[in-house]
Amino acid sequence: MTASADKPAAAGPKVGAKVASFTAESTGGPLKLADLKGRKVVLYFYPKDNTPGCTTEGADFAASHAQFRAADAEVFGVSRDSIRSHAGFKEKLGFPFELISDPDEALCNQFGVMKMKNMYGKQVRGIERSTFVIDGSGKLVREWRGVKVPGHVAEVLDCVNGI
Image (cartoon, rainbow, N blue to C red):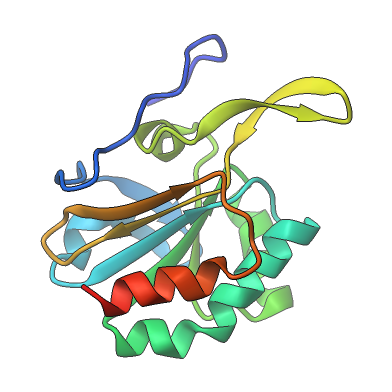
């Protein structure tokens, strides 16, 4: 599935609805949502590897990784960067979770995270920092869009612990 630059972003799945299964390339190999049935899944979409906000967000998820695992949750970071870029980013920062590469924006479009943003006074199309929690039955439990990094991971962890 390839996205068109002039196509608006999809709305994404609705809270309470089942998330359509997907297969994506990750730093740990092919990842299928269906293979994670019975586990909680946290998908956090971020704009770009090795940028300040994305580095901080990833480090925050890494620092809380043991607590997510104790809550039977798997965390995955998603951006349009290549597997090679993700592998370097993951290794450099010691992330204990996998990063998903979505260069054709299939997953980004499925979750409706692509939008026009202002960068240095120019309009650019990019990922809106967003997080989604999927329960063990595959239903979307919670979403955050336009995420501000400070305190976000703690809020996601509270959500996961409440499921």
